[in-house]
Image (cartoon, rainbow, N blue to C red; front, side, top):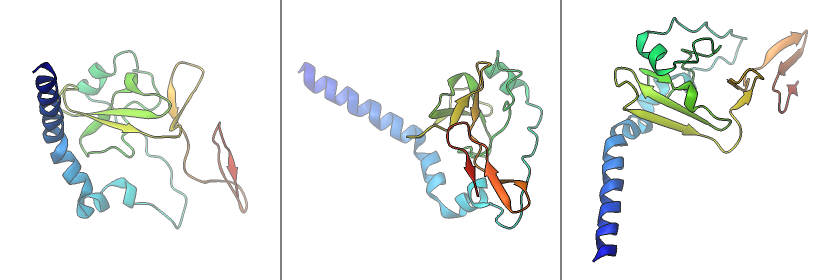
Length: 152
């Protein structure tokens, strides 16, 4: 009886977790929504600059207490939703955690990778690994990664 209850309880938790996040997964799987997100709005004809992060609102500052001086506070590149912000204290070499605005961290999204997305900057911050080519001189371009620098 105990094992049956454990299995039923486990299935209930899985069902709850799946139903709680199914709306977001459905939206992420919709090609029309994906095309409108930054992953599909890439510039392949010229070099762009990273826009400065907007001033963080009160919720972002409260949820990122202690990270007020983090250089990427408020940046939302490649976020899983349009109204998300990153919880910087949850960042690791291979992961990010986002929260939906207005939920005070109760509705979160996890992003994990098998390879590093971030590197330590020596000040206790995990910074995003550069992914964009930048011109360094005429005809030579580089991605200045601390792990594997690329020059073409």
